[in-house]
Structures are given as C-alpha cells and as structure tokens.
Image (cartoon, rainbow, N blue to C red; front, top):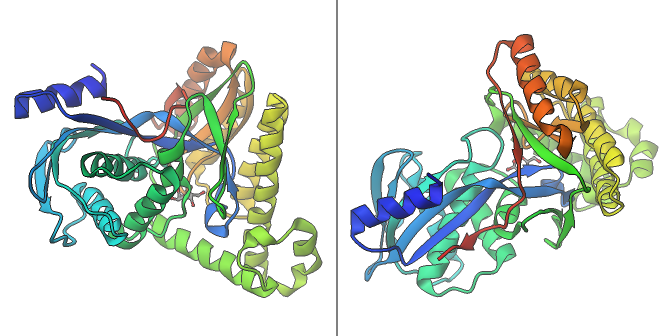
Length: 379
Ligand code: GLA
C-alpha cells in the first residue's frame, strides 16, 4: 500500500472522516554542489520519490495533535505555548510552527497522521521533508499562501534554531521547490531556482552505504568555520565570491587545511555551473565526469568521505552504464549518487549491490529514483 493510502486510511479510522488535506514533502538527492550552500554558492539537487506525508484536518483551537505511524505514537502541543522538548520527531513539527509564528503568521491548529519513507540519517534530508510537510500543512489550515523560498527559509530556521543543526538552505529549498522530472540549479545567495531536465536516457541511482554518520555536527561546523575564515582573508562575504585563479594567487597565505577546504568549495561551484551546462547540452558523459571530480575533491580536499562512501563510489564506477558517481549530502556516511544509462540500470543495481556487499560485508540499498515535485497538497 502506498504511503499516501496508509496515512489516509489511518486518518479515517482514527477520526471517522476523510482528511481535509493530504500533504507531502520530499527528501532529496544532490547531484553536485556539495558544501557550497553555506558559502552562498550553487547546488544541483532533485526532490525524490520518498517523502513525508501528513493527512490532516483543521482544529477549532490552537493545538496540533499528530500521530506518527513510524513511531507508533501520538503527541500534541499548543501553538500559543511552544516549548522545546526532548529530541523526538514532534520537535520538527514544533520547530516549524515556531518559525512560522515568529515570522508573524497567524496559525491555526490541526490534527492528523504523519508518516515518511525517507530513510533517517542517510543524507537524503528526512528532517527537511518533515519540516516542509509541516509548513505545508500549517499553511493549508491557516490560509497562508504557499511560497517555496520564504517557507524554505523558515524550515531552515527551525532546523538551525529549534532542532539545533546548523545546516544551509539546500535541503529545505529543494523539498519546497522541487519540480517533477527535473533537477534544480539553485543559487544559494539569491535563492533563484532553475529546473533542468536530466540527460536523455539516464537515471539517477541512490546508493545507501548502510554506514551512518557519527559526530557529523561538529565536523560540519568545523568545515563551515574554515570556509568563513578563508572568505575573511579575501575580504569577501563568502567563498562564492572567490575564483580558482584568485585562490591560487594567494595560496601561500592560507594554512594548508584552510586552503584545501577553500579549494573544494571554489572548484565545486565551478563544477556545479559546468554541470548545469552539460545537462542543458544533454551531455551525460561530461556530467558524469564532473560528478567523479566532485567526489575526489570531497575526499581529498574537504575530507568528508568515509570508507563506505569511497567503496560505494568505486563499485558504482565499475558497474554497467555508469557515467559518474559521488557521495551526496553532508558526508561521513549515508548515500552516494550515480548517473546511469537507463537501459543498463537493472544490471547496474545488481552488480553494485553484490560487489559492495562482497567488499565491505555491509548490506547496501541501491535504487533508481525519480525526480518529483516539492511540497504539495494532494487533496
Ligand atoms: C547537509 C546540509 C546542507 C548542505 C549539505 C552539504 O545536507 O543540511 O545544507 O550543507 O549537508 O552540501
């Protein structure tokens, strides 16, 4: 049974009527442009066919009452008295409500059923999916017009200030603004988005290494600080404003680690723009090569790969039909992504699963995914 049918059925059996709204907001996979969003740079993600769903109806009061099918638990809170609690799933709903209210939106309560199939902690943005689904639900019951970029900024604020993870804008923005069958080139400074179709005859494959990131927050914050200190040296707002020749000209003024971090970000912005050109030219070979180069830069200069990610990318590159492969998301575990010839995708999946298992004794999950719309109301 689809997740949509499951939340609707659970709603009907709990509340005895059809839901007033069913909303979904997707997870994402990033094709290229990693660790560039918080440097005001470019990213190139697509929203995927894995999402958070909420079936709901408005309430006459200020309460949000939500039942999670995944955690088999009902929790509630008062929109007029939002207080941080433990780290449970309800905090994502509360944090999003807080961010919307803090921005001056008058909110109405709702009750409903929540479920998701974005794997947790895999680097596919399960938290952004639940934040943007909540924002969509609150907007629907409160009569707030839906505008993806401002809503994504509020989702990011919930993640930064309520959940306490210092992420950039990519995950919430692609979850809010994704377009079916397209990847989205996002300028993380202006928040402009440009949909670009995948090269003809190719599919995007997500490769879950079955390794999970540990200590990712501290490593992520450390990378951010290193990027900011490099930008300061150049007297610019963010590394987005530095080109490769400018960086090379002043390389000796940076300590070796900061130089490598900056070199990744500056070259990754250039690769991301080149990837958009390659896609517009329908050039899968070139796009794949840029993805390969991105992985090498993340492995050697930004140092956010683990053994699982490196092993997965190596196996993917050897498998039938692969144009290119790289880690995706924050790194340190989670998923890789590959661009694969559609006609060879079944053989690709079979071989990578078998070879990765043999090489690591881990049990990976490899699947073709489809680009979907961002946060939307289904009924
Ligand atoms: C995480 C963050 C994003 C982005 C990526 C790295 O997914 O949430 O904002 O920084 O890492 O590209």
